[in-house]
Length: 158
Image (cartoon, rainbow, N blue to C red; front, side, top):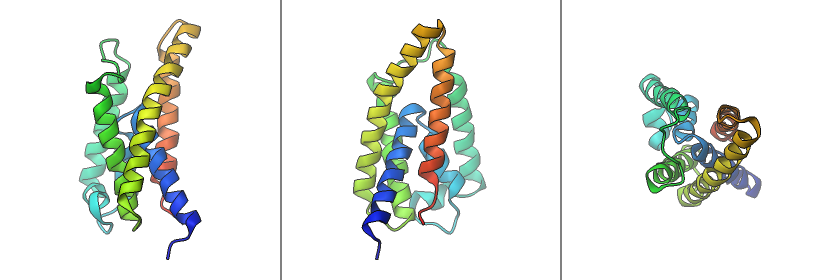
């Protein structure tokens, strides 16, 4: 039986995957792919192999590059926000299922974190852009945050 601490840890990691998805929409699923195997269950099983890791990894690299382009639309509009919420919730649910935890609370926590980071990350990036006169420092800081959150979130529970 899972302890309260283990359940909270899983929810915290699901929220981290959601926040990572709020920063870079593919980050949460890429983390699940890279930390899972075909022996897992649910989406972790589907993504947890060479093909899943390759596809999500390529999508993540593509997103990192596209994000730096000035014509990339805002993440706060529906076309930018909806995929972040859905992919964040999917990553959180995938983590929960992989670890035998309840899927719905993890998906909700991840979607909420994706929404929060989408807004807060956009504000942080704008402020850094104003301070440095370029969007690049904020974009790179957000890349680093997404990487750290995805790394933490994708780890396996103890």
